[in-house]
Image (tube, rainbow, N blue to C red; front, side, top):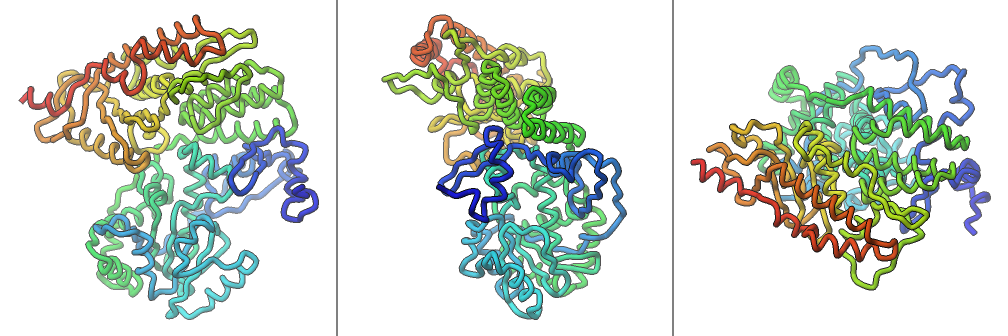
Length: 605
């Protein structure tokens, strides 16, 4: 009925995927259905085949993992001449960092009110936030609008808004000296939006986003002789550029400018302060130039702390998998993704879950339903925003079943003969609750414990470079915010810096989860804080052994349930067993010995 092979907007894309729909990812939204390979099989195109010489030209796509995902290979030789392109003088203004209780977009509108300015947004829906100032040009007339904007006098206050156009537009010098980058420059495709907004694959998308950020800044600059003001708005963009791990993958020059802009914005007590700072940059004020040069000369760089080799290995694995699945070599595709599955989980749990899903797809196409279901269960259990795989023996219970019990049920494997088996990784995943592992290994086991308890358990700091070490979330229930300090010496204290770190992570949870009850916990030795720390009254300290005991009760309950339940009674049995063993969240916290950090400090004093 859609006439896909006749409509010009779909006929060419449909010709590519029509015989490969069963190997594709299908994204369904309220507006459309998108059929796309999960990993683009770019090497299937004849001009990307092995044996053909290719020269790639790019000013920004320098990260090897981003290159591998785009072109399916790594170049044998890279020629990267030293250049000052992009190193123009910039003042970066971040209105949300100023001491003002105002919407940052509204402040940005005031800052550009009397200036000729370019506004970049990631989507047309985001463009509606600017419709009282400027609207995006019709898609067929974008080039004409860009030319007219470029030719307009510098003194005019004309505005140009472009949606999802981060390259191909050059407005250097007096053609445009003021630009707003609103919100994170993500792709407009449903798959990439799903990976970012639902799976939160920050680690694997970091270099791709960095490339777009760099491209965005380059729209109004071309070299050292240029200068201008760039205004950053949108919570996701501001948060991304201020996270050290993210900023560390940006060019050195841009890192320093962001650091300077953050410092200038934080000192502003009024919109006039921001306007004055912008004016000094645009008029080449001597004081501004001196301060700018001094700051950039002394500014410290962020440590990128990015394992490029690890990321590139995963990117190459995805590219090979995409190519092999496209050619229906399912066994080889499964072998490729299986070989790097541990690497995927080492990068982040969400990345591992995404790879589990598509490894399961390869097994399914091979006819190995058991292995496929195991992978699908692992994918959903680890990342709840990957849909659960429907089971033929799924039961229908008349009683209302809590979401926690449903989530536990979806992690158990029901075999063809009706027997129920525990997750294969249960013991190994929880092994480091015994205290034998590093803090990172302990974080991994704490996340897994939350998962097997049926909660949405994540490791925000591992994935995003900020936030708690482990986070347990259940809809409508208190959220557990865990900071792992198992490496501390038993004779030391919780430092002021560590208390501040946990406070920062509590705020991160409020910003990302919303208005809910938060239980902040140090997991480590039971000891007081230093006299100068002043911990909030709700900060708790819980020894790791308490989580070990919780894990042991959990394993015993799961064992009882699978031994005594039938597929049709599994959820009811889980409910009864978990209630008897006091494992329903958040009641299971009541059985744990926990201490208020402030009370510990009072006792010590």
